Image (cartoon, rainbow, N blue to C red; front, top):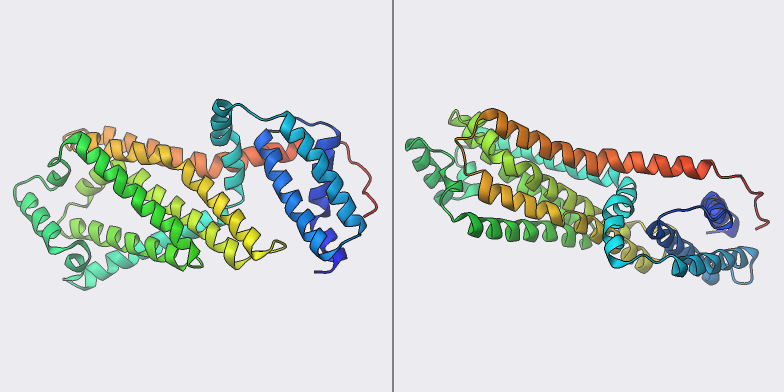
Length: 332
């Protein structure tokens, strides 16, 4: 890339960062750290391609200033954790809304494919869910308790087993992103087809509502976590495929780091989903209003934390940045 194009592409970001440094604007240390990493990446790029240039001198100056501030404002570990969930991660998630949407659309599309396949092929459900599960569920339906599968195991054992299984699926969805994102799409596709065929199976038996009010008590968070992990896998895959101004290795490391942060955000959700499936879903006698309340609260939290809050926080930060006095552009 020509130096002029490199400067034009990143100049606004550098000047905004310089405003933050010069005016000593209070921002989260983690945000400052992320900006510092980006500046040092640009510095490394300039050292390679534009040695002895004014651009290199300017970026070196920015990196030095930000380094000093970062090491003066390090947070304590406990505050670091709170800051991660309330500030650092939501601001990061804002930049990956497109990947989240793609993961959601992919999952929704193949859920429909699974349902359609089950509707047009009488053996499809058995090929996906297995004869053992289908036969057991048919027996439970005949006994008048179609959701009995959630009552068979001990609560604690089920909680632990389900949580571990959910973690495995999510890790696969993320790690397979290293296969240029194709592996992630496969995990989303296979789980979505399973869900679609599963729901159609109950629809065919006239038990769609009974299954939905029961399964989605835990499934709302469980399925959301798979989609979010798919988003993380796409972030990783994009880091390999689209390095931009970074070297491919640096872009891969950046994608891995950001993808891992997305995965870390789901840790509490694994626990909640496992708890709901182990201790709550089994109570099929609960009134509809209670089941619906749990489902809507779960859905509301996911939409708030992963979609609405990142937008709101980013816009707030952006407005604060725009209120800073404008500085004359440096002679780069």
